[in-house]
Length: 98
Image (cartoon, rainbow, N blue to C red; front, side, top):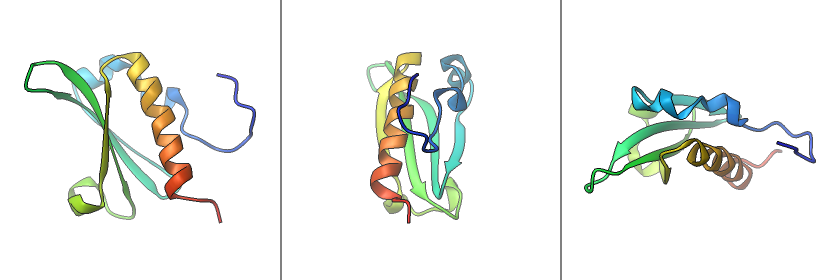
């Protein structure tokens, strides 16, 4: 990926390969934003990636659901690319640098 700016961001390599999500979920944090990436199965048995973000300092289980925001992506490595872009965009919009 060629990024024209030098600002810190979540890199695609930070969130592993799609095979990782067949077995478990991933929690990460970036400059005050916490996130969870997990595989879910829809009612029609299709798989999706659900990305949930919330503000720190508490973990997923100790943060009220009203403070969490989720988005769905295709369950694929391309979906993970889109999830990384989404996380960076969400961070820019909701966690501006002072």
